[in-house]
Length: 211
Ligand SMILES: [Zn+2]
Image (cartoon, rainbow, N blue to C red; front, side, top):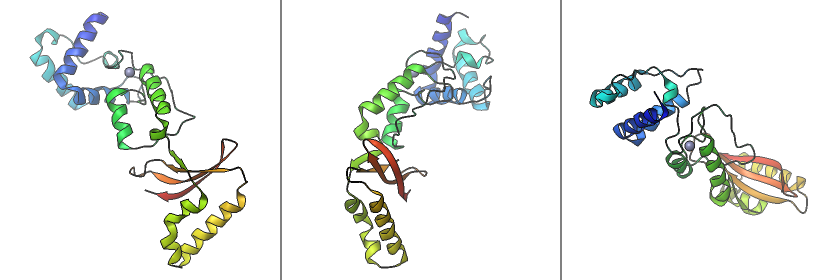
């Protein structure tokens, strides 16, 4: 089969399944960590339904997973590239995931699309006010204001919070900046807190709240 035929099959298969099911089909293979990804039952079933309605492709057996490992946005083959964002932490929130999944779907899969990854990285950085876990510059007093009820309750937990705040304050230097972070508190693994930046470098990250 030449490349033109391959693309034609993928294109027809995509229209047949609809974008959501098609992406699910490709993701399944793109995230299969075996050297040769395997088709699972529902994928074989979907392919069977497709060739039944497209007799011209009925001679194409479902044996080659690599045929499907292609980004449907950019056309690049999906391969193991191990591209990761090492210097930018972004929030794990639904709005960001939705944009990624719709426009740049293969930025983070096990087998990645290089074009998706670059677009993803650039988009995150261009929109850092929205995407970065670092939300705003804040003072220690303003940050701890949210715990005022707990502190006023005067129990042991309140005392611990005050001690924690005083310990942080004792470590601060005059030019330090404090920024509030939020990794996406809607996610189960999300957390929030503050970071201390000295001459533009993060020197301490203090987790205060968990999702
Ligand atoms: Zn892509």
